[in-house]
Structures are given as C-alpha cells and as structure tokens.
Length: 540
Image (cartoon, rainbow, N blue to C red; front, top):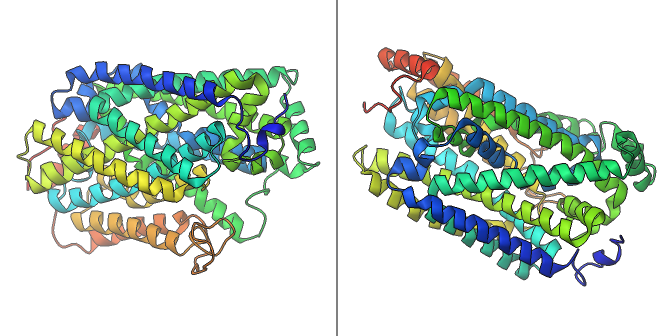
C-alpha cells in the first residue's frame, strides 16, 4: 500500500476520513452510554470522586494502566523510536521503571492513609490549611501540564486523520475533545471515567498487540530483520541501534539533559495525582495490591509492543515521511496502521488513540476537580464542614473551568511533541509532590514548614527553569519562535528542581521550632502500613 500519495500534505488524508469519523463516533457513542449508566449511582462525594470504592483489583488495575498509558505513550514513543531508535525507547524504559518505583514505594501507603486526594496524605499529621492549599496548587499545576499534552496530541492526531492542515480546523477539534471531556466527567464522575479507562485500556493493548504481531509476521517474526530494514530506510543510519541519536548530539549538554529527563520520568510517576487517586476506587488494601499486579503486566506488555511498532514504522514508512506528515512524529503509529491494514485498521487505531486522549483527559479533570473541591473548598473554605452535595457541586463547576482552560492551552500547545510535554508534567510532579510524599510517609521529624518549602520550592523552581530553558525560546522547536531569552541549558529541569525540593523539605523541617503531633505521626505510620481506620483526621 502506498503512503506517499497520502502524505501530499493538506491535499489528502491518511485513509478514508469518513471511516475514521464513523469509528470515532461509534466509540464516543458507546462510552457515553456507559458513562450515563454509571452515573445513576452518583449520590455522594465518595461516589463522584472515588467511584464509591466499588471496583475490584482487576478492574482497577486495567483502569490504572488506562490512566498511565496516555497518548504520549502510544503516539509519542512509537514516533520517537521510529525517528531516533534506541534513544526513543528510553522513554518506554523510563515510564515502566517509574511505574514500578511508584507502586513499590508509595501507592499502597497512600491508599491506606488518604480518602480522596493526595493532600489527605500530605496534611494528615501536619497543619491542614496551608498544606492542603499547597498540595491543591501542585496537583492543579501537574494536571494542567498533562492536559496540555493530551490536547496537543488530539490536535495532531485528528489533523492527520481528517486531513485538517490548518491550525483553525485543528483548534476546533481540540475544542470538541474538551467539550466531550467536560460532558464525560460532569455526568459520570469517577465511576464513569473509570469505565471509560477500562474500555480504552483494553482496546489500546489489543490494538497495539494486533499491530505488533502483524508487523512481526510480515518480517518472518524476526525483530532483527525489522531493525535492519529500519536502518536501511533511514539511509543506512546504524545510529538507530545504538545510544546517542537524540541525546548524544551535542555532548555534554544532551547527556546531562538525558539524565534530567530520566530522573523526571522515574520519580515523577510516584507524584502524579491522577494515577495515585486511582487507588481510592478499591475497597481494601488487598484489592489495591491486586490492581498493582494487573497494571504491571499490562503496562510491561504494552511498552514491549512500542519497541516493535517504532522500528516497524521506521522500516515500513521511513523517518522522512513520518517527520513530514501532519502531526510529525506523533503520526508514526497511525501511518503504520494504514500501511499494515488499510483504512479500517487505521480508523480503529486512530479511534483508540483518540479514546486514549479522551479518557486520560477525563481522569485528569476529575483529579483536578477533586483536589479543588475537597482540599480548597471542603477543607479550607468550609473548614471541613462542607456537605457531600456541596463538594460534588463545586467539583462540577471546577470541571467546566478546567475544561475551558485546557481547550485554550491545548490550542496554544498544538504542534509540540506530546511525549516531551508529558515529560515536563513529570518533572513538576517529581519536584513539587514526591519529596513531600516520601517525607510524610517515612520521616517522623517532617514539619509543616518543610512541606511548604518543598512543595512551593519544587513547583516554583521547575516552572522557573522551564520558562528560561530552550523549550520556551532560542531553539528551532521552541514554543515561542523569533526570540531567545533562555539561559538554562537543559530542556528538562528535573536534575536541579528535584534535589532542590528534597533539600528544602529537609532544611524547612530541621529549622522549624514547632513540633508536630507525635501521636498523629504514629497513627499515620500504623494506618499507612495496615489501612486501619481509613477516615481522615479532623484536627487543627
């Protein structure tokens, strides 16, 4: 099948746009029915924000993998491997190792200690008001970065599939995704969102699995042959099979940048509020552990698929065609689907990628809404006296506001590489959230001042360094073209901002004269390890 004629940019789409739209519409229709059915039992805040804690370990494990395997995992990584080979696969390794770190270190302890949000854990034995405000701010910041990445992915993907080369048309697409997300979350809450994640994760892994087997079958089930063909398609560039194609170009900056990216990916997952919040949807610690096992198997298999798919896209389509397609490197997976199975497989894979974006965006929106309604409104403004109905009402208003912000931001971020935008979200999560989570769970002397210094310091330093990095200005792919105000050499701030946040948390605590409650520290330790008494305290 010939993709060359399809890539006459702007004149024709890849595949048949009516088939693509039809499969999109069918998916949206089915998930909306599921969401409406799930919404019938959304009575309390526990129903709306934690799915009534009614999901089994297996269901939650599939939903967690759905939340974690974002459009960046699928579109961004396959594209990065197709263009850069070995260095692109490092995203997969980073995301997978990160997941293991997150689960083994903090997931179950967090689940046992909190109720709805990450702030429940961070403020458990510290002063509620300042810590909850800080945790809500960092949660909203991470969710916003991640939302921008997903919305930009939606713009690039649909540009490719519906043949919309102009930015105005892509902006309309991003607005439609945002509107659908608002509808899903307003109607279904966490319950509806979880079911959308389960459907989407199943489709994504099946779709990627089918493409992987198909691509291997066309090369005699020989991965070496696929890699050899990818090198040949790249004009004999053997750099695809060794480190350095992307991160070894201008030594030493790119190598240090790579270490910074790796740190952000590996440590960021344990601070991602929308993934951690998933653990509140299961009834017991045992089910939480079961969901971890399910998620590890699904995520591990998926990242192995991306290795084959990335090299297969490089071999069968070629890096030049991928780079020049609408959507750039994010188009590698859809183009490979078209090359393998024509319009129908392309339509299915595109719908899966679209579903991925919708589901992750819905998960992020409900996390941000829960954080605002439960932490800021319920605990700070109403001082813990808000009724369940009031919290749900505020959540719904928050979702609408976040949806509008995400649409505007997504239109602004359209055209950026999705995996890279996600890496920035991870850097903010690793800097602003992870040190405080670890100190809260494992260090008895940790104080309110330490928490605030660590959260605001991590958030502020990572944002500050991103603004003055090549990401924003001074490079060929910078967000703001035509100006150069960058002085920080790294694209990812993790190497500086993460250690800084740990140091600030330690420094703030040892210089703090006020002693935190030893009883609450002991209670938190028992709770985190056993799950006994999982209702948040009402002190301070």
